[in-house]
Image (cartoon, rainbow, N blue to C red; front, side):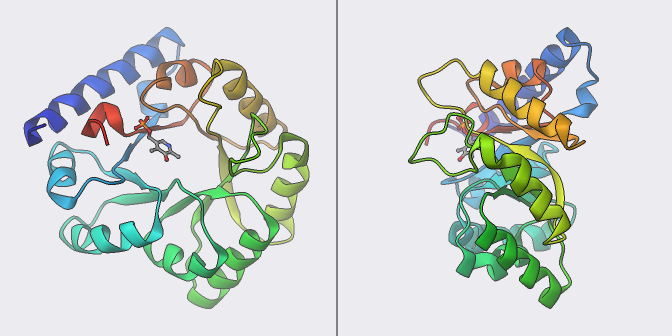
Length: 222
Ligand SMILES: *Cc1c(COP(=O)(O)O)cnc(C)c1O
């Protein structure tokens, strides 16, 4: 796919976000598009930046480390979100690279982020990832454990928890999962809801998403 398709795709995705927001009686500006650029190289990402996109998501620390420092040196106002699982031994690198860590899902990781925050003076915004479908192979805290874990992240570890994130099961309608995430967030007064990908971001917006994570619809198939 040629680079100008990325710009055209962005226009289309932004229009779809605006329409879904309007349908839900929400301001389009209340939704942040996180362009998920995993597997795509800098030459493919740069047209998106030039088309005005500023918020990007990556799912691997090593891959982000290879691509983003050079782009960030050239474009100073970018914001980078980690949307994939984080190993505790990569916390230091993750805090050096990412503004937002969307995948906080266990005590040991919360501790590692807190310790690295203390050491580095960096304090990333964090989302707690909830495994709404209770899928054994999937990351995220179980819904039944979410309340205790969110409270511990904030009160015990001092993390800057700004919201919740989920990835619904592939083979189920996503709406009940989005609704569950919104309900848990509301109990904690958390404004951020990172939910919705290329296939379902309009549903997610109807159910309150503040961050939609869109890869394929912008950059094409991986
Ligand atoms: C890859 C990925 C996305 C983007 O998925 P698309 O279907 O390509 O839009 C969103 N969220 C996470 C966590 C991802 O890993």
